[in-house]
Image 1 (cartoon, rainbow, N blue to C red):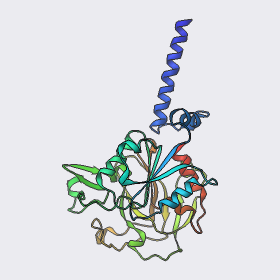
Image 2 (image 1 turned 180 degrees about the horizontal axis):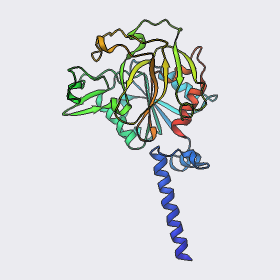
Image 3 (image 1 turned 60 degrees about the vertical axis):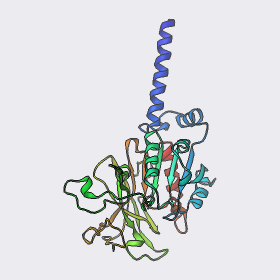
Image 4 (image 1 turned 180 degrees about the vertical axis):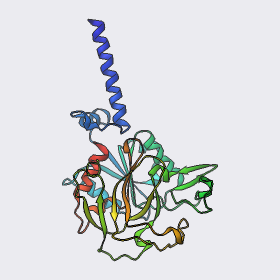
Length: 307
């Protein structure tokens, strides 16, 4: 009897360890087990999940507004703090359960690798709009010809870079390639509806229960999904007609590459367990002005951290 009890105890410990690993990697949501999320964050994380807003200079978004939105008691009442990307290291980013990168147009390649390693170690990452689309002085673009046999001598995009003799394929990590901000590629009228957010899967953890069509006004980033990797388009922006861009200094664009169609990717997830999500617009824009879509914020929070 004693030997049986010991074997049962060992089995329980092993199953518990496996459960923790599956939740940690995002393969299994902590809500798959009754009170699992509360137990996971209380026992292993010391309480409520922590969110870091990593910001830089310029770019779409307002990190101070985002911090206020996430901390709003009427929304998710999250434990969030903002910190400049320049102050971040591999050590301190690992203290957070979710990182949102916003208002950070220029990000150096070593910081991109830091965010990649953070996800590899179990973290969850939300990348927004044009974050990281401006290179630092020591960085350089990766050319199509350096990745593909029949590629052209043009940059793939700002998230694909050289890393010494290697490649830094942050575009494949995100599952998308940046083309430009819509209001840089065409004329925009402030406050005017620019398209409608169309939810492709209302059962997805980031869009569960949302209206299938949501009007959107404001600037956002135009991206194209990559064919390689594990990528899921969760929602699009229906532009109404083909979006024809006018290049304005983007070296990865040419005249024959400027028709992006009428359905533009808006929320995209990638990687094992969908621990990486890309939003084409700043997060706080969902509750600004005439766009009081609180459910978008709630689904982002619970979808990334609890499902």
